[in-house]
Image (cartoon, rainbow, N blue to C red; front, side):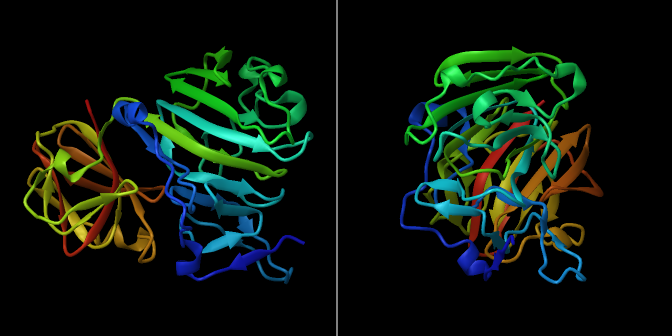
Length: 343
């Protein structure tokens, strides 16, 4: 029977003593972000439901909040590990349109099964690059028109059970997806849909994943307090997390743009002259519990801003004029993966 271990928030998010995995210096310069840090489930959520031993009680759906760690997934030791098959799958907190992803994985047995979801739905399940040994690398669970166009390439992979890691690279730009295995081009498929979606891993078999880095094409990433114009002192950066209590302002103004950031703690954004508190009445019901990061997107076009928080589109629309963007903490605030794509 599938079992889920209910943990306190602190235990669920506790980090091991291992350092976080980071992109290389070249990847950092190119705008890559870390999506598997090797310590915890930051950037991820579980997709599915929590089975209940009492069959008369409806199963609880997983949400974007990390308050339950199911027994088929483990984070730590430099990896995210799939321990066995069964519910739930693993899904990213962010969705992506044009991006490049690089990751490593290894199978514990010669016969293995899982999958890497690309531009999939919120619950993931579609657009899978197969991790099934006979057809590893095949593009499956996609629209009928693409069936058979991304062939399996077992000859390019390391043998399961050997302890060797495989390197995958996936590039999605517009309607084209290109796939490399261990540095060798495997296939390229056009007419790939949808235009955006989530990343994820299928829960089948026993497989280790590590060092997943993602570059969102067209974004400028602010990794260090020195990249901003700061009015406060004492900002520090560790493991890609900026911590401080002073106002940080972008060095230039923006008019039409998409802003994405992850925050933990009280504060607000200044979008030109428009203030958006993180505890705004429309945002507050969707905020994650204290201690967890929140994932916020602000998309501004022709003076109107649309908001997205923790996988949910909000009906709220703000009037926003051209101007710099600032982060204003109320007290100590953690900030991560602050990036802007100007249009």
